[in-house]
Length: 247
Image 1 (cartoon, helix red, strand yellow):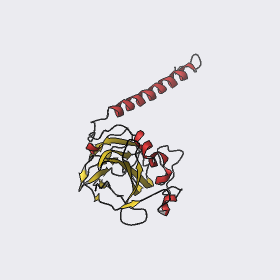
Image 2 (tube, one colour):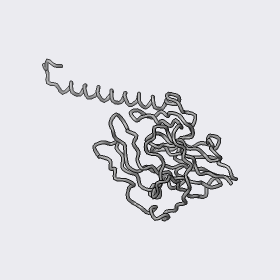
Image 3 (tube, helix red, strand yellow):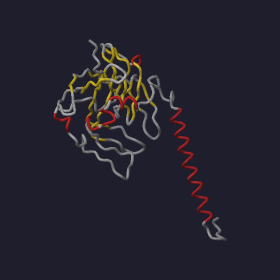
Image 4 (cartoon, helix red, strand yellow):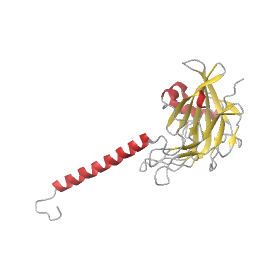
């Protein structure tokens, strides 16, 4: 019988590997939902106690508690496609992109952020966020599976954030501790999670390989800032009184 429980392969530098909610031993938490396109979506929720990847050029973005998600659409005893969570988005790839280890699909967890990838490597991210590093040389975890519903186990009803981290309103790149799986509606619904995913970029696993959008956005951002600075300078000059020697 097909085993879709993922093998979580960490980066060699990972300090907060996959764990469990109520045990020292790691676990993966799963639920099955009929898929609209046929077959079944099998979701696997992954829990990490701490996310320590910094965002930007300051030490921010770290937070207690980190829920990640991967899901597989299974039809006729084979994985047809998969969706892996990556930060605030997700990536959707066909079954041919999934690596197997001992017959189970592999998830490469990025160092610190725990973003999930189909292959080992380095992924470009929009500056000033750091690139995601998942070299695949760290701990490989074959975790036991725990079935979940909205109300079972009892901790699934926890409505408060999973940790004490709270973002400062003065530092927009800081993050709160996340809510539990059932309180993340766009992820809990497998169809919504899949529909909102970007197209597969599983082969983009080296720096600079697929960063055209990143470069374009960075150049656009710099252009907007320069334009705003020039506009401010022009307005300031127009407001100077006649005969001002500094003009």
